[in-house]
Image (cartoon, rainbow, N blue to C red; front, side):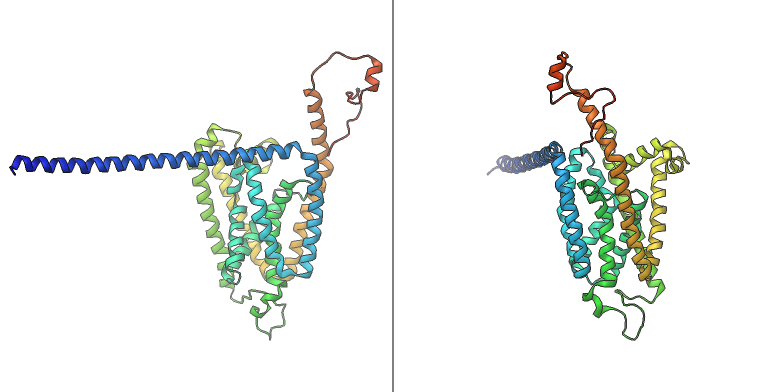
Length: 383
């Protein structure tokens, strides 16, 4: 074989290898495109299903409210019974509640364009709780971190943001329980759970038993304050990267997509309250940064209080009563003040949306079952 023929064969072989590589690359690109299309189609199907379910829920609003109220009251009574009779089962009740209702909340919030609320600290903290309770129930250090979250920022958020215990509203009920239940869970584990009695402090101590028992104050502040604060800072960084960097254009394109900052700033601006004035100390352009600083200060203060609550059974009992009382009080205010006003507004909108028709004679009007209210006639609120 001549040198020219050998070179031709080598070139031909090299060309075949290149063609194979090119074909393989094309197949890989095509496969990626197919997978990307399938993922987009799956996401679109899930979004459509979420919207469909939420719309159906709105169409049957009244009956859903009545059923929710019934189940809420019965569930609250059952939970109180379990709390007294079998406190060791309270963590499992909480886990069942969270894994059941949070996915349903995502469906509803996805339809309302509120799904970025699920990036808030309360859901981040509740994920910690689920992991600890299901996989590391005897880990004292992780328990103390979770305790700080539950009886620190989450518990005080009930009071600061005026969460309302309203049995007829699934959304408000879930919001309250997400913040209230974790504290009750860790209260029962620390003071009432008979399964942890064997791991409690030495028998020769006369003080009330608790788990975990901690004498070293530096150890106490490390795992109830310093480590939880580091975990909170990690969440704050992740939240900033997702909301203010990765999804920034999404929020700029659609002002209806809500986040906690958007909602709180909107309400604070409307009320012109102290939070709105504080967030504007560095100018309007720095309000998000000030919001982060204020939230950080709130977290530091509430975590410090959680350390004091951890050390005192009496203070912990009083705090539980205070939290429940605050949510019930806010719920009563909502039922008496807000719901009637919302019902009247809904009735007015319905009347305004009805088409204008030729006015019938007086006899027909008197016999009609769907007559418009006369001037000054009170419209009965529909709950």
